Image (tube, rainbow, N blue to C red; front, top):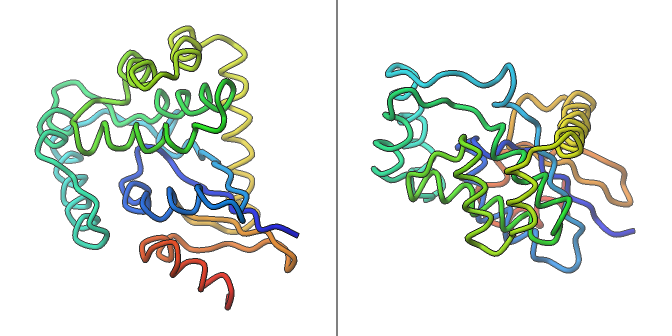
Length: 212
């Protein structure tokens, strides 16, 4: 039986961005089946308006993530996203973008996740806005996904809600307290990996799998 890794995440989660190098490496392996499971943690009721207090808290947390993982959080992100008047902390658009890719070019979804994360945290683009996320998809050649996101029709919304529902059910089943997290399914059954094992690199995680 092959090993399946189901990655529970939110595209606006800074800790998920911190885990990106490990996640991207795992997703490229031919000996693993890798599945993305967006949880909707920061969409819907989890979204909020950005204000000075929350922006300061987020930046402090991001600095901690950078120290631990080496993933960069730039001043462009701080000034153009966190400190932007009237902005929102809302992963709806980015999550819909990933679902649009899953429906049209599923083999590129992991690449699209990296694109959206780096656009926000490195280049200071507000990926909580549908036009921004759609333009990013278009610029990287994912035109069908960009068109689906721009239209945001009932089919896309339904598919997105179903993905979130499945991810949240997995979190509840395995007692995941937050993201990132990963469900491993192999000949021994299914089990939850805590997010902290995702920060040491793919090889370290695979060694952990062999002994956990």
